[in-house]
Amino acid sequence: MGEIVTLTAAKARLSELVSRLVHKRDKVFITRKGKPVAVLMPVEVYRELAGKGERGLAAARGALAGLDDEVDEMCELIYREREKEKDREVPL
Image (cartoon, rainbow, N blue to C red):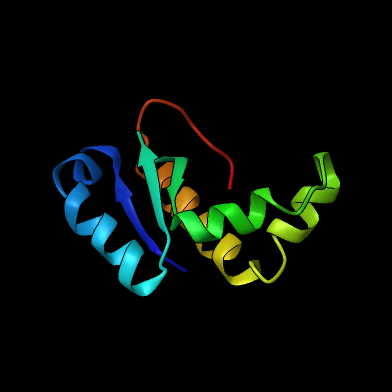
């Protein structure tokens, strides 16, 4: 899985993150207020995903193939951030 950074950190480190994307073909997941909101990825990866010619759920099937570990890590991040919330009770 790629690095997970806050939006503020992504703004401050954009040049470094883009270099990593180019050289390592890594992904960067961006969060805002503890919630995932965006993914930075190399343009080649985007073109591969966009060029599949499928729409809707059929496109998601191919785009998400092999991401079980990444989805699990992202869910763990979400649960950790929810536990930090003091404004409301969240059943886990």
